[in-house]
Image (cartoon, rainbow, N blue to C red; front, top):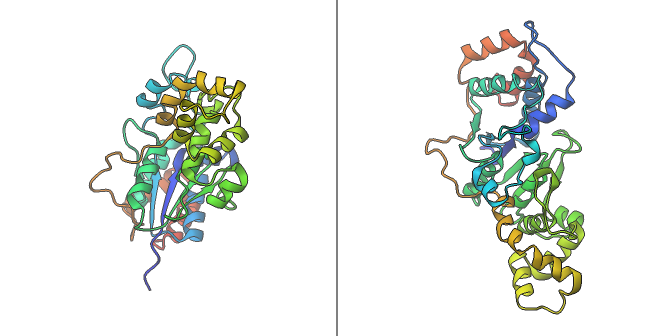
Length: 310
């Protein structure tokens, strides 16, 4: 019997950062840190074994602060810049050398890794979700709430949210979760709420005085951000006093906020992109070299066993 098609999209940086901070320090014989490598591989093994995807893509941040988002809102992620420069703060010292190892191991196994210049992993994920709608169910694995906007019950798109329970016990984010937790009915509604609320962790100011609860109530009442803004422009008497003043004062921000908050769903993807799980190890010799050099045989073995290519 052919397996049921299912696409698993990994927000890679979110997961290997979690692995780095969650897995005790481990070193190769040459004293190279490997805890993020082994932790990330173990996460993949767990996910493949449990979720039984037919397709999987490790989505990558080729640009963590894209120009089009900075142009819209210059404060976007400025707190992550090295003081006095346009360069991102270094990742933790012992994580930085592990990222190239992760890339090499994924390539040697044959797992697809995809980043697109000028875009974040969120945009890669958004575009892959869009291109697979109606073709197969999609699960997005992340510790980032921004991707809740992709949830769509009708199209069978969920988020496996790892912030609390990790990949072993993720929160399953569907529309009923969004309604119960945030008071918004859809993924699109979550994005509109997030634009109103703002997000200090990403340098998004939001509308002053409009918190999460108020933002959700406004989106629930007016359907979406466009509906709310039309009601403001048309003098809806229900929007009055200080609230109206705050929303009107934030008009310029609301003009551009969706460009920052909403993930891209229509970027150009490589014509030769293959998302299906590998049927065999792509480069056995290179994989053996990596296992020998870094002492990661246990984690590599768990991944290849989960993929049934050991």
